Image (tube, rainbow, N blue to C red):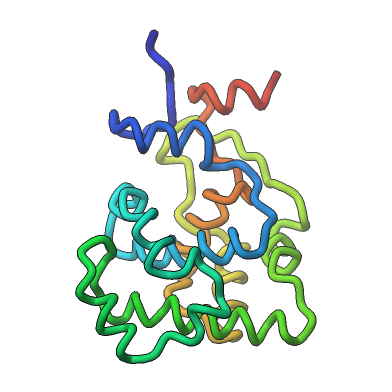
Length: 189
């Protein structure tokens, strides 16, 4: 039986599973949000499926995205990571995860809640859109621009407005399943 999905989904079973069970589903756990933000930054200039296929390797290499462990990574660790074909071996991207971990820790050490902060850009609840076609889905919005600016001010990088919007979609802050997608149909029931 043919299942209608959003136009960006390929025939790859991993991509279909990601679309069907992960993308657009609200995530509130701060560490999961941190991990997803870092992974979305890794896709800069690449397709998401490239990072999705490497996600397990990223989790293993980056201590399941535990910021306190990542923040202690030194230059020797960076050099080791750059030899690992299971991740994108780009020095700037590897260093960005370490930098983001330090920024995350500084933020939460001030008594802030990372989840509340991020969800604040959509007033704490998912923004459900009903785009008719893939071309109707924006690549960035005023909310993603504001998130990007705030994250950069906190010391994060690889968090431009387009990356932030992809992140917002992935963690369910924004639900952009197209109207012909079976996931959108289930929202209307």
